[in-house]
Image (tube, rainbow, N blue to C red; front, side):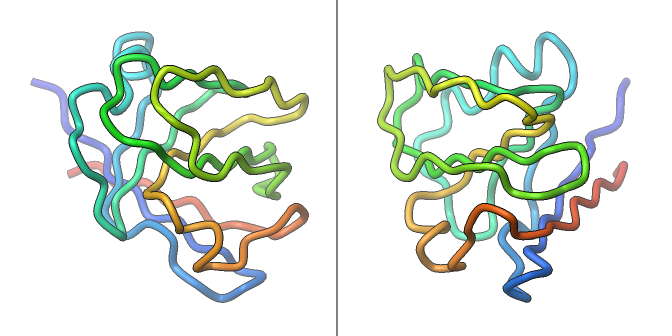
Length: 123
């Protein structure tokens, strides 16, 4: 039985925690499934998809804020309130994509160039 990896994401530039108890999608199957079947994302929840530079929201039930982060953990770009059944634009240089509850980008003030800490723990 494989162990689950949990996720914590902090925007160091803004000194705000974005995700406290998220999930990691780092295999073909976990990236494919993503947030399909999730009816609601609460504040503190989210999904880190790696490697990734583009996402889709097909089969998702809720819109999400999407953050595109490079290998140096700098924010490249965001898609706020990306609706279900959409395809996000490919972001060159992105290594990680974070799907988070709507409103998180605005709440945190996250902007291109911000530096992040991405921590995963095996539990």
